[in-house]
Length: 503
Figure 1 (cartoon, rainbow, N blue to C red):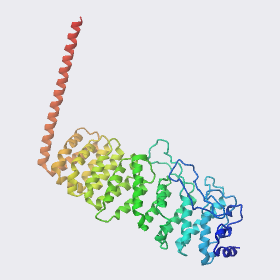
Figure 2 (figure 1 turned 180 degrees about the horizontal axis):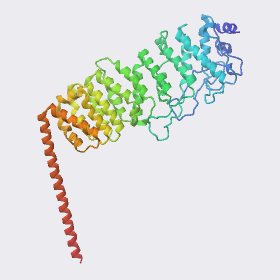
Figure 3 (figure 1 turned 45 degrees about the vertical axis):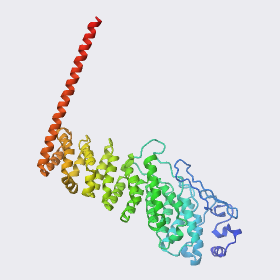
Figure 4 (figure 1 turned 90 degrees about the vertical axis):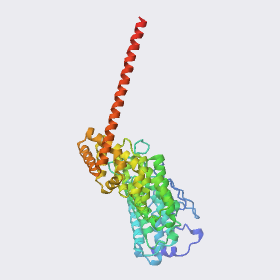
């Protein structure tokens, strides 16, 4: 039976019988296998979470008039096709096309028992397609490559399920409960695996593949990073990274599109599930930047990466963001001044958790900072460090004092002690006198002793100035209290005189 079908499919079809069911190895009219799976005009609003759960797919009529919506539930049965090893080499491309069309149909996974047989056939078919590409059994024809990208698009570009924090007013926070698991994953991860194997395959010609993996495809792929399923984001991260590496023509577009996602996240929504994964990709990209660094890359650092410290959900992606920032500073140490001033601009005021993250990042940046850049930003930096020293949150104060355990930072401080010690001498003295935490008190004494041993004369001078400042402050306070006392006495006299006049 299959040989007859293959012979019929082997001839070049006329335009009039392009929808001949024999071409696709599909059954008689009336069941699932009765027509052509048309995916030529697919419009998927996958970026909106508020859209209906089903994808919007517009299937254009084919010359024969038959139309099948790939999202429609099958009314009959899917029959499994032969495996590639069971057919002649010359017939494998046609079999590959037939398997692609079977995989265009989607199923309802909210009911595990519904269409169980058809789901399993699709799963096995996807596995066979993956194995065919991975094994390099034969170079895929250009037409089949186009059909494969269409099949992948039908399966992955969809309306994402509603996020748990969507339309609730809740902020993005790191949740302790189980992460979201997309019910479509049994088929979805195989489709992603097929796309990944196609992209990394040595048989894939980028000159042909870029016609189908175009800017529109990449943009839709980026939109999917907003999914709440971490498994899907991991696949997307790997695939996009491979596309960036293989398709050089797409590199500027991908960087610009990621940039736009960051802008929208920072200035509009502050809600996006895939910021961490996008930053992981960028970390690898930044590592490969050539020197001297282009101006557009520096603008990206200043306009996108540094402002990413602003959102409240910083803790969810700070590790990846910090890595990107450090990559820039290590590539070009002259950027350290701009980075430190950018961090000071977005320094949290009352969020102690974020403040701890900032202090850790400042230490990493200072480790890669040279003396000239340090001198240009040390005054505002150590004013902020002085405020952190006096924080009533013991972890913030303690983490700040740990900066003096870094040899490179101590070296920079020692070279510029004439400027730094006068700034932080008062916060140190205030900690010793009045900080409630014993650990902070002990660390402060150690830092004070370090400065004393570093430059005794400077320390004595700062101590003398501090005492004079305190004396002046006490005198001003006494004068202020005396002025208020005189005003109170005058008010009492005026009130007594008014009473006498009234009597």
